[in-house]
Structures are given as structure tokens and as C-alpha cells.
Image 1 (spheres, helix red, strand yellow):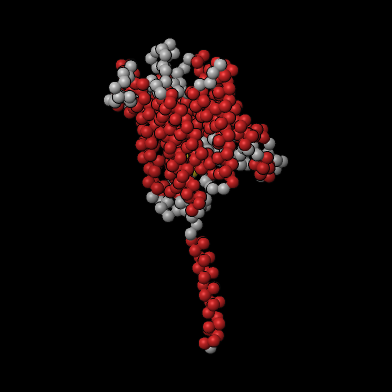
Image 2 (tube, rainbow, N blue to C red):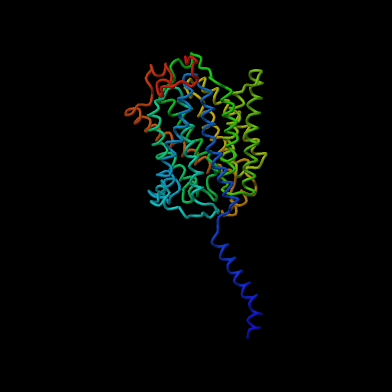
Length: 443
């Protein structure tokens, strides 16, 4: 008997080890590699916000540097509070009100996701924080359209309401699994990393705000030279670096899709900057630092919705196309005379529209084949273009109308446009009681 037990003991131990191994594999579902990349991506996207502050801060006059940079940091603070309270639930909770927005009480203060590991094998905390950085930078982009003339308290109130009433619904429509734009067509409206959700919504809102508030005093006759183009270039560089997390992180994976998104992001940014610089050489005989920075952003914005579906050649084309069209849009702004101070609409709005629509003509054949397989009779490029145009049109209309209502309410209550005396003295002094450059005369 003892011999039989001794002979069976190795088999019993092996079975126990096999059983325990299987149990452990089932219980521990977090992929540490993917989680590490998503943590890195989250930090990279947050880095873009001070990068944007530097980019915008260098473009305004000396007396408005601190005031302008505070728009970005104010968004970090206000949306940083609102996102775990309401934003995440409204954006990614189960659809309510006919799918208009999401909601689930368990997402309030993120209280119901403490133990949740998502199907992508990352803790839901990481996904929530990653998406929260998108929610922060989007309203910060708007500030470029009305720089140098907005009340800081009114601005904070506006972005808080805008985040709840514009950003969260659009985010739910495009990115939530039950969003109607996510499910439009066989594979949904394509917005890999935020061309529609982030750039079109913010750019259009910026245009509406610029028109509503009116031009800066003295515009366009008075020279309004950038205070620090060195800082603007550094800001553009930080945005470029952070954009790898913005786009490649949106794969919510660490695999081939991630590598593709990172590669096309690099190519589109370089293509946009090169094309803008070439235009300036042809148009003015010299390339400018501001032109390079603008071209970088145009390329990055255009590739944002497309990063998951276009190959490198398509990224190169999108960067070049966006640079040309954004350059022309800024030229048209000068002809029309409206004061989009830092070209929030000219680069982000136009670049986002170009990317969301033009990506259709550069989609990988494998993506189109998958879409065609889901539809009787197949799926064409032009049908997908129709889906993209629908998503773009709905986003433009919704963002414009709701933003206009919010601007009117804030202006009539808290106040949004600063008094002329405050504008002339500069936002650094009138809004914050500070000066960005110490003893340098702000005037």
C-alpha cells in the first residue's frame, strides 16, 4: 500500500501544481506590459498640457504670458476634479437619455472600479486616468482662440460646464461601446485618438467663442508680437513627444497596433512641419520657427483620428494635406478679420476636420475588407466617407450651438470678456496680480 501511495505521490503533486497554475492564470488577468505602457501614455498626455501652456504662452504678448498659461493649468485643476466626479461616468457609463450620455452611479468618484480589470487586461483606474487627460487638454485648447481678453473666473466656469455638456456627450457618442457614432456603419465612425472628440469640438468652440467675444483691442492694426518664440518651440516639442502617448496609447494595448500608431504619428508630424516650411520658403523666401511649430501641430492633429487605420504613406500624405489647408485657413482668417488669437480653429478645428475626412482615402485595405465582410454587398470608401462626414457634421453643429448658449450665460452672469482697462493692463496683472517676466515692463 505504501509503495502504491509513494508511486502515486508524484502524479498527485503534478496534478495539484497543474490545477494551481490554471487557477492562478485565471485569477491574475492584469497584463503588466500593457499596464506599464498605459501608465507611461497617461503621463505623456498630461505632459502635453504644460507643453500647450508653453506653446500658447510664448505666442501672446508679455503682459499676458501668465494669464494665458493659467488657462492650461486651470484646466488641469478644474477638469482634474470634475472627471472622477462626473466626467468618466458621463463619457463611458452605460447610455441613458436615449444614449445621449452615459451614467452609472458606481463611476461617481470612481468608487465602483476599485477591483476592476478590463478586457484589455489593464486596471480600469488606468483607463479612467488616461481618458481623463484627454478631457483636460480639450478645453485648454479652446483658450487659444480667445487669448488675451477673457476673464479667468468666467473661463473656469465655462470649461467646467463645457466639459459636462459638450465634451462628455461627444465622447460617449464616439468612443463608448453603445455610442451611436461608435456603431454607425459596419465599424463605426473612425476616431482613433480624438480628431473629432478633441480637436473638432475644441476648434469649433474656439471659433464660436472668438466671434462671440469679438477681437482684441487694436486688432488687427496694432502689432501683437509673440513674447517668446523660444518657449513656443519648446512647447511644440513637448506636444510632439506627448502625442506618442496620445495616439499610440489610444490602442489600449502594447502590440502591433501600438507600433503602427506611434510610427504614423512621427511621420505625420514631420511631414506637416516640412510642408509648412516649404510653403513659407515659396511664399516668403524664409522658413520661420512659428511655421515649423504650426506645421508640427497640423500634422499631429490630422493623424490623430487616423492613427489606427492608415499606413505610413497615408500618414505622410495627411500631414502634408493638413499643413496646406491649415496654412490657407489662417490666411483666410486674416482676410475675414475675425480674431482667433492663436489659431485654435485654424489648426485644431481645420486639422481635425481634414484628418477625420481625408483618412477615408488612405485606410488600410485590410480594414476595408473587414468592414465589407460585415455588410451584404460590401462596403466602399465613399460609404465610410459618409459615416465620417456625418460624425464631423454632428460634432460641429452640437459643439457650436451648446457652446454659444454657454458663452451667453457665462457672459451675462459671471462675465467672460474682460473690461477694456483690464485688457490694456494685461491679464497677468488684472487677473492674477503677477508678471511673467519679473522686472520687465509688461507694456
